[in-house]
Image (cartoon, rainbow, N blue to C red):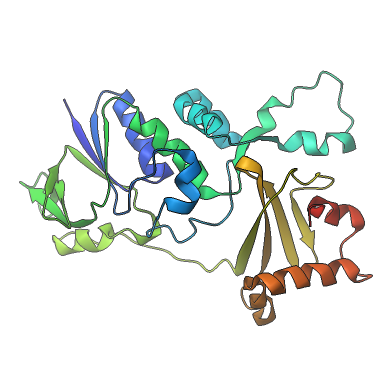
Length: 290
């Protein structure tokens, strides 16, 4: 039976592993971080993902992604539902502003969402753990590539990887899903290959998130993403009564860096609501729990 090695146990790596396993391959997934907890309730407090800089930032599964998962990997959606991730239909939030027939099908716009990425990743991990043919090995950072007889002259033929502990894991194919911090380009160069081209572009914005928990989620009267002059505000529901507010601003705006401080972010929002040129009452109504 063919064997694949996948580097990285994030959503991309685990999706790749599950799809390969469904095609009949044995798949070993290697990840440098600690394993996910057994229970979803422990994911936020007790799961460390050093390799994912944005692990505690907000995340949203778009309707297209939801539809693909339902079609190809329904176990992921089932795991998210079991973990308590809420459903959100983006079209229904705006339906009262649209002239739609009463029987209009808005299902294609439905998604499963969470403001807390650990919970999103927990769904992928839970599904992968129960997928026949998939093995996840954590605390297994890849530090080298193993090569065999060349198939194409002058091009290293990778037959496996070497982990930090010295273990060699072989496979018929090795797939890099290590994300932005992947070591693979440098490892390819180390075995005599051509380093892949890498392109990095500064998008020009920064964002900071605050998380809240209460008896009820905010009532949505406007879009979940509201442009407010030189900034934008994203309000998302989450699992277990949590919700989040994220403030986006230019990365060149030094004054806005102060919103990293919880006291400054609350004060900033209060001042915006109090100014005549600030956002409208309906735009701020998404923050009713404040």
